[in-house]
Length: 405
Image 1 (cartoon, rainbow, N blue to C red):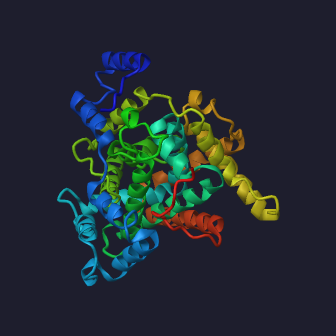
Image 2: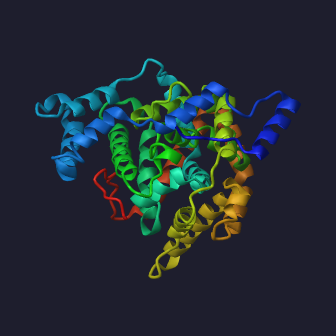
């Protein structure tokens, strides 16, 4: 069983806040226990499929072809599909009883309004968690956000974000959003299996790689976390909208194999408690892997030496923006551990445009037409940035990728 201990400093803050406001920063003991237990819980249905196919006799290439074919023509039209694959598709295609389609769409609309900022603040917050070995070891071993592959992996993730928040996409059978979600699920399971067998993984200390608890943290990093952080940059997300984006992320979690119904927050306060509990129980045990990941990501936006003119300026702008987000959304005492671009120009730009963003946010509450244009404009800029950076590269969400060491 994984052991998590609340630090004395966080306990003192919790006691002081509770005494002054009667608000408890920590989740209930039952939720804490469930969070700990889920560090040793994976995705059994998808794991059986990956073990039988990608890591079995079929091998990665044939398994990828089989998955693509099933997504294209439907699992019922593949008479030779293995039973483990049928079970995976049955679970994936079943919409849980708790899903409210209206709330899912409202949550997707929040993501569309956040646009590029969603990915940037999400990455800054994620880099702040690389103090933890349980998160840093799988990423370093898989090469996901390490070294030269860091930007491309971010572009893969951005593609998924862009697709799932399209109007109606997450609930539409056969959509690209759902196709990519299943591939992300399979990729996570494949990495989990490989990392769990690697000598660098400490199962006693960390449980399972990419556990249910850690996947849930990414869902909070797409809902409560950015909602609160982006408020400082002018994005006026209401409590009702945060609850909607929480619901949206819960359904996205279902699509990628995150089944955390017993502890998933239904309120903003519960989301804050879980984020605080994670911070309060950090182990700071990632060693050299934390700097490897953090110091590899932001500099990956640096333009290549042969890039000139407007393209170079554009790349430098995004480099400074990404660094600016780290100044805002990484804890200062964590950020000081790493060598990062100053980010001061990006920070100045983000803070300087906040009043304009807030003005548009007020306008979209008064006018549905402004809201529609705001969403469309944010998505257009995000897609344009993604296409420019992606170039001729292709996102593969490759479940057959070997560990890099």
